[in-house]
Image (cartoon, rainbow, N blue to C red; front, side, top):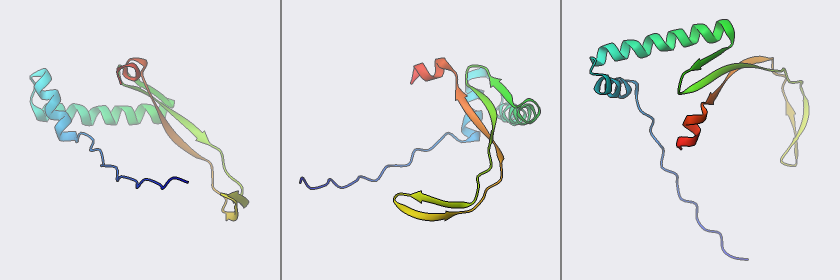
Length: 108
C-alpha cells in the first residue's frame, strides 16, 4: 500500500468587505463612497423586508433568494458512521436558500 500524502492546509479565502465594496462601486459610478455605502445598507433592508413578506426575491444579475421550511426531526437513535447515537428532536425552521443567476454560473 502506498504511503499517504500529507494534507496541505488550505489558505483561507477572504471575501470583499462592505467598505471595499462601497469603494469599488464609488470608483465605477463616480459617486461618493458614503452614498454607495448607504445604497448597500438600503438594499440589505429592502431585501430583508421582501424575503420576510413574500419568501422570494431576485436581485437582478446576481442571485435569487428563496425561503424553505425545514421539517421537524424526531428524537431517537440514528446510526452515524457505524455508531448508534441518540439524537434530540429539533423543531421546524425556515431557512434562506440562494441561487445564483445562470450568467454568474457561466462566468466562473
